[in-house]
Each structure stands twice: as structure tokens, then as C-alpha cells.
Image (cartoon, rainbow, N blue to C red; front, side):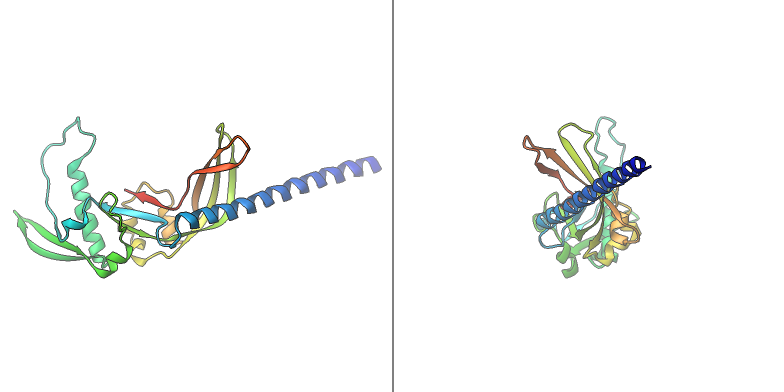
Length: 222
């Protein structure tokens, strides 16, 4: 009986040690991932940048145009769809006060609008003009570590959940955030109803240390 109790006690102790080590490890990862996100995004206002389109500083005020015709099957880039999406984004962002919108004429029966950045729009503008006009916002706040994955040789993936601070009201417009498919968890992050999923990718160095190769903050989303 004593031997059996001893075995049970050892099993419980081992399980407790593993549990404590895992949770200690998770706390270390949580602190590290938070620090990495804050280092990438020191202002707390560019966790994510949403691309409006290829409109550069010297192109404002910008007047929309329409493209028609057949799509070249050998061209992987659908210029017509991209132009239609740009016109739609300008209209939606104008409704949220980031652009002015002025009717300046017609192309046949189609209205031509001229857009310019408002003071509100310039608050969120990525000043580098990388890829054209991009609006940036937000700070990642790590809530908890979900999983540590070492399945890929030489790489560690750490999955976690987070919420986002400094989220402007304009991105909470479903018509806007639903246009951006390239950023997993954008809806969760901007609405804040449920935690958003995030992943940090690390290369495992020869001495066992980790080198961040891809984080959550600083993403440009097309």
C-alpha cells in the first residue's frame, strides 16, 4: 500500500513539475512576444497597414477612372478587378472621413469622383508611401500562449491569442475589413469580440536560442 501511494505521489509530483515548467515557459514566451511586437511597432499605431491602392503622394488629388475590356488570360494580374476594388475602397474610406469626395464629371453614364486625403486620413497614413496609399493602426497585446510547435526542423512556431489597442472606428466597418482577406484574424482583432490568433516564427540557432523570422505586428495587407 505504501509503495502504491509512493508511486502515485511521484506521478502527481512529475505531472505538477511538467505543468509548472510549461506554464513558466509560456509566461516567458508571452513576455518575449509582447516585447517583439512593441519593438516592431514602437508607436503602437502600426500593428497592421491596409493597402488602399497605388496612389502616391504626387497623384493627389486623385480622380478615378474605369477600365473595361477582356482579361488577358496570360496576365496573372487582373487590372480591371484591381481598378474596381481601388474605386470601391476610395468610396468606402471617404464615407469614414479619410478622404474628401467630389463629383467632377462623368465617363458616359458613370460618375467620376476626385479624392484627397483629409486631416483624419493623414493621421493613419503610412508616410513611406510603400506600395502607394496605406492606412496603419493598432497595437498587439498578447493575452495567452496557445501552443509551441517544433514539428519543422530548425524552426519553432509559437501560436498565441491577442487583442488590439488603438483601433479606429473606421476599420470596424464590415464593408472595409471584409475586403482584406490576407490577414488572418483581422475581423477578430478589430472588433475585439473574441481573441484573435497570432503566430511568431523562429529559427532555432546552433546554441538553442531563437531568432525571430516573422512576427504579427507590421503587416501590410493587400
